[in-house]
Image (tube, rainbow, N blue to C red; front, side, top):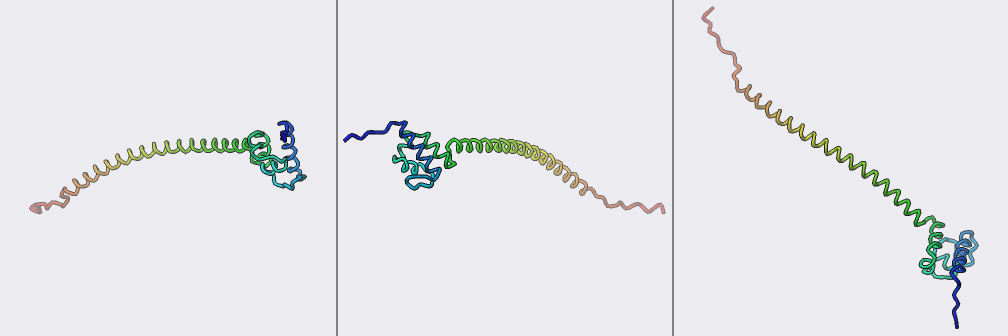
Length: 140
């Protein structure tokens, strides 16, 4: 017994018609949800056949589901670009903040040195006897 296969064009047409019937609610098998498995059942083929030999039909099914790999890829690429832009801005901000920290650390060191010098001067003034000297009262 010979099992005669359908030509590729005829099988592709069957798959497209199966997808259209499901989309319009006129499925012969009662399918209502658009999936690769549902289209395969409607067309009487395996899901592997769709994946392996008719990837454009699989993509059309994903587009009908709103899950097109191209759309998902484009959305991810757009999101990646947005995140890279944010990353670039944040890296620039980090660079500027590091420069400010370095500048403030330098200013802090100068102020610490000045503070030490002022404390030393203050200690010298405290050592000087500021008590009034007793005057000789012999002139009275």
